[in-house]
Image (cartoon, rainbow, N blue to C red; front, side, top):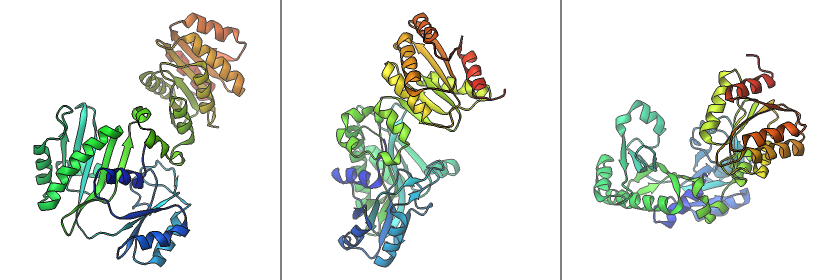
Length: 389
């Protein structure tokens, strides 16, 4: 789950991390009050969407006068914005963050993320802030430093000092970095955060550290512990189908193909999509119904798949371990009847109660294609979608 910049900065402020003075507006009528509340020689108008690289796409504008602010706000609010991080999709701009301008001396990069190799959080820092960190990593990897955090002892003083020296900080900024790293780490633990990022983290001309931007990603697996964050989730920034899937505990990602996939287990789902592509097809989605699938959840999964008009066939690939094949079969039959399926459905079942599951499908009287194995299932699904090998 992603947060907007203004939401991330609210979290920062709660733990004492400095951010620019700012006001959020959702209507143009609120702009004058926001400008008057911010004591600044100018303002920055920032479109609030769940994506980075907004500045390059025209979503962040520096304005000097109230007239300019109104022109920019009017052009952004209520429109949509696509950046290099939105995969060609334009996201709606429902709010703007109006912020003060700062006298900036230096731009840095600071993030805390889950390092899956080290099995811990790790700080990533760079003196090359304000740039695409991916480009820095590709062309100047020596400018990026990594500090894994031992979960037993947390952030150590020597790591704070090393980070400060690496960034060339002195005085107040040096001290503030250490404090910021500690607060970042505790915030991540308290809020089940997978990624905290400030780019740029600026050093002002009076040697203060300010989080000029803010990005926060919450671990969706921990949302049950974060009811306050769930309440501020902005579904308008998410794919409607993916948001709907999360309500039914389904892992769904929309893709561009025409063969719908319903599988239990992420690894099996990836293998299924690979085989579809191997035999000339294109998967329309990634959909993992999980180990505790019920007939109701399977029915919802079918509805999600069919929400795409591009789907020409559906491949159901279930290995019954925790989930029983007969329950999956009941869900398939229920879903086919409910939604009035008119496109081919290829089903491959293996595992617990597989014979009962196959018998249910065979006796259903529905036009369901039974596959003898995964390869056969993929080939039949591709053929049913009208793709020539």
